[in-house]
Image 1: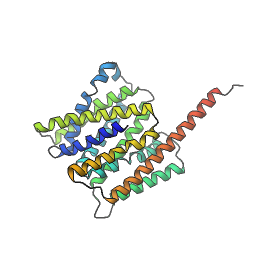
Image 2: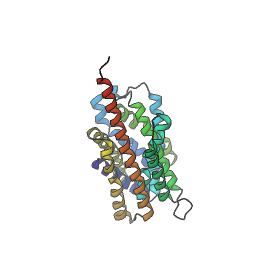
Image 3: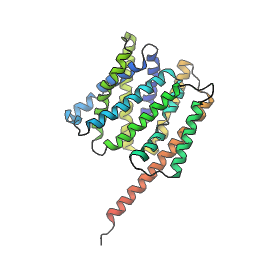
Image 4: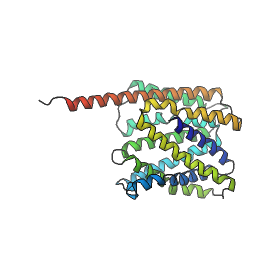
Length: 289
């Protein structure tokens, strides 16, 4: 998880560098294109059969939402202070909790709702609507977080029928044609010096996703969640060193609230999941009379 957070953090820094000479939408397309090429070993291992699914329409809808989130997220990284853009991305679990209630029928009790409310208070602290510190661009970062939350909800649906590698491969490859029209609308030929950055951005995105997935196989999400927030530390430090961007007190305070709320939600969900698992085992082993 530390390696995953580092990969995503470095990718954000390189996106900011590349945005000085290329539109964020075009960077997003090349991230998708080179990221898809980086999945070639996975495709070679499983063969073309790994792309078979009975839910292709659902994949297309899911990836359309994911593409919207990626475009919004890349735009936010290119135009907002980096620490603020990353901090707002951490509000995604708040949207996941709301989506789980609306679309999955999950029961969320008072404690988790309180954490969601607290998390959105943290978002307001970062965004500061109605003040001189407010930027409309922060709403784009929130759109990215909400889209990521919707994609997370969709994974719960897909994982019921398709293996993880199929989900990764189809998602990665569908992003390419879905992001292309947005890139063409702002297209300009990348300078020769940008090509290595674009390749590395794509590779880091796929590597970060792979490492994140592998980490979740080795330990519970609630245990790993604190390590994933290392991305904010990495981005803040490098943004200060490379771009002379200093994290302001409002962003730091709001990020602390959002991260605290997200960690609490993760731990509560893990506790509920363990309880349900124990109850299911008990039900299966109970003597039938």
